[in-house]
Image (cartoon, rainbow, N blue to C red; front, top):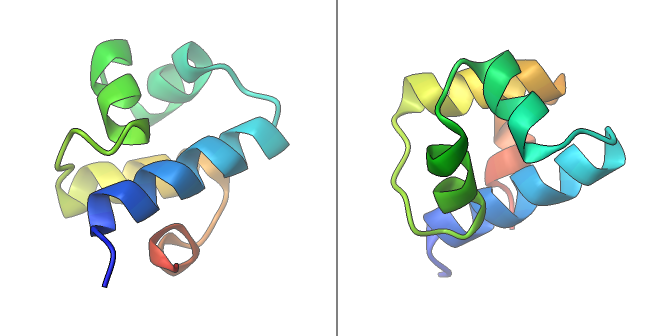
Length: 69
């Protein structure tokens, strides 16, 4: 099984691109720091369930889709 941080980060980046949002815009909408968002997308950060939920809401994507491989 691949690392969930990497899967989540890759999916966040893909959906963010589809929504034509910058990292800064997504970070603002999800109420998280811009550098933290970059770390999440690179699979270097371990976001809490609450942070993952805020990102999913900001992207208008169900959280399970962001966690699927």
